[in-house]
Length: 391
Image 1 (cartoon, rainbow, N blue to C red):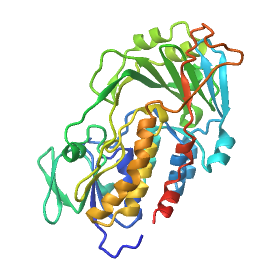
Image 2: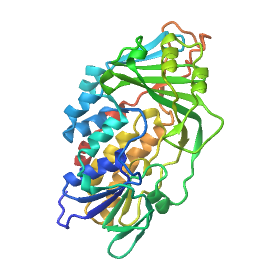
Image 3: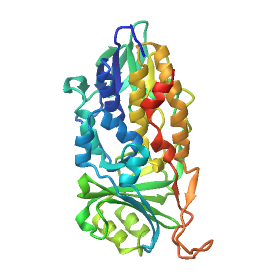
C-alpha cells in the first residue's frame, strides 16, 4: 500500500521466532527496527516443530528455502497407529501435499529455524539482556524501561514477548489462563536409537489416556517427540520446565516396541503444561500492538504457533505506516483468522480414525476416540494473497 510518511522506528520486544520474523519482515520493508531480548544470549528453547505449507511458503519467499530444506525434513506420510502398533491410517504427504498446497510441510528443530531468522537481522539491531519491564506513551514516542534501569524510545512498540508478555498485560490487563487437563512431555532422540521408525515419516500412536507424536528433524538424524498426557497438577506455564522420565515410561509401558525404544532413549523430557486462553478482543492501543504468542497463545494441536507468528509478521510489515490507524488495520486483518486457528486448536472439527473392520469399540484400548483433524484450510491460507485481496 502506498506510504508517504517517514519510515517509523519500531521496537520489538522479544527475540524469539515471532520477534525475529517481525524484525526481518520490517527491515525488508525499509523500516528501522531494534529488537530487545531479555536473555543474555540468543537461543531458542524447545525441541522440534512443524511448519505447515502456510508457513514454509513465507520462509521460501524470504529467500530461506535452500537453507531450510538443508536442515528440515519433508515427511512422506503420516501414520496413525494404535498403541499395539496396528496401522489405523496412513496419509500421504511429501509430493502430494506440496502439489495440493503449493508448498511443503516441513519438520524442523526450533533452534534451526531460530538461527535462520537470526540471519535476517543485523547483529547491531538485536539488544541482549534487555528485558522489558514497562512502557508508556507520550506525545511523540513509546518510552521503554528495561529491567536493568536503562531506557529507550521508538515510534512503535511490537510486543512479541510470548505468553507472559509484558506488553500484552499492559494493553489488556491480567491474563486469564484455563488449564486444559493435559501436559506435553517433549524431547529429541537420535534416530539411530529407534531403527524401527522411518526417518521420513510422521507417526502418531493413540491410546485411551495418552498419545505420542514423533517427527524426524535435523535432516533425519534425530526424532522429536511429544507425549500428551492427562495431568491433574497444574504448574506454572513454561517452555523449559523439566519433566519426569518415570512418568513418560509409565505412560507408555506395554506399548509397541518402537514406542518403548524411543522412551528408553529419551532421557529426561521437558514438560509443557498446556494452558488455554480466550481470544483477545483487541491487540493494541495507540502505537502499540502484539504479535505471535503475545497476541494469540494457543494449544499446540494444530502445530500453528510459529506459523501464525510468521503470518503476523508479513501482515504487520504490510500495514505498518507509523500511525495507530495502520496498526489497527493490521489487527483487524489478522484477528479473525488467528481466532479461528486459536479456537480450532482446542480440537473442533475432528475426523475420527478407525482401523479397517473395527466396530464401534474394538476393545483393544487403541484410543479410537482420538482424532486426526482436518486443518487443510489452515495450510491453504496464503497471507500475501489474502493481503492482495484486502483492498
